[in-house]
Image (cartoon, rainbow, N blue to C red):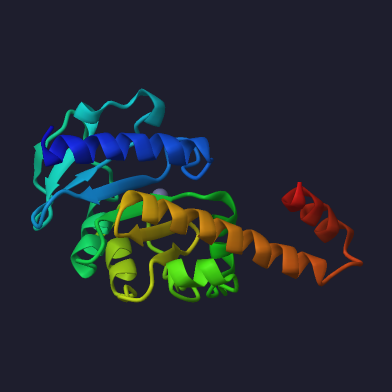
Length: 209
Ligand SMILES: [Zn+2]
């Protein structure tokens, strides 16, 4: 099996695993994997992750997003992923999620503090919220790309979701999980700080269940 086939199969497996964990919210979210210095594989636009095959994964040229293979139409966030992969040559994987709690946190428009030791080590530090721009636009890709740092593997996008990076898809998925865990813990602390607010305590009970 060649590198491209391997990458496409890994993308399919990872998309299903992320969907199983509820991080893609239906057909939301998408992911990319670098194949070599000039090419990457990306999920097709608005596709059902459970019905997707390796042949549906799109192979694009990193420099201009030209599609070279794949039955699907490339994800609208291909430009976002290309920007991340160009900014971080040390990373092979870029995963964009609509993970529920971290996405809700982006409405607050403030950095997410990362307290847990493992999370700090793998994410790199507190996670910034990149300025809002509509999904699939160059404007959004640019808002995120300009925040990218070599020591930070997670970025939140205002009123939208997250982008997580990793040397491999497994590493990027671990960042996704830790980001969600830290967002849950932030809400738990914030809600617990208001014991007399009945609505907050109901929300806290739901988060803890
Ligand atoms: Zn999205």
